[in-house]
Length: 173
Image 1: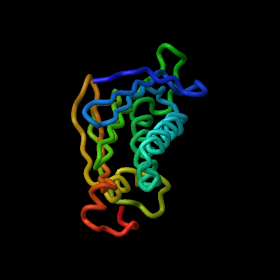
Image 2: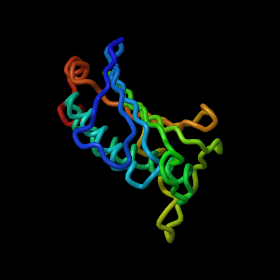
Image 3: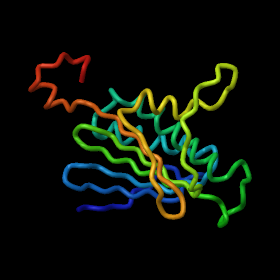
Image 4: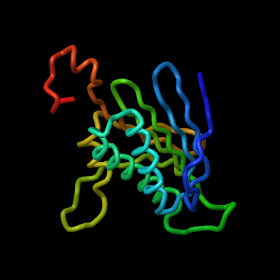
């Protein structure tokens, strides 16, 4: 296993640290983010760069929406809007794992209460996050972890070499 610490181009409010790991062909990045509204923006930046590095722009739109929803939910679960000054700032953790066939997004927060998939209220501006994750992801769930929980989702895609072997048209890759 190869591990390196990656420093973002511009380090600002919302990031704590980023670690990148390459293990048996799977890329992994782990971030600790302040549980603030800016966390979703930082998560999207890191994921967008990871997908570009692996030439996976084709799944970018869906993946960015999924990471935004999970991170936003974790921020809400962690702070409930009560921001505290560092070092007592609530923190969330994001892990992105990319293999030849899927992207796994995992977000940890300190609230042990499980997420609840709700029916969308068309008159309300909130409450659709997990519904989007359920519809757009190829699987999602949660588990208890480190005095909190991890909510995860997976986005499957067909690797270019496998698509070539199956004779899939480019639009399905």
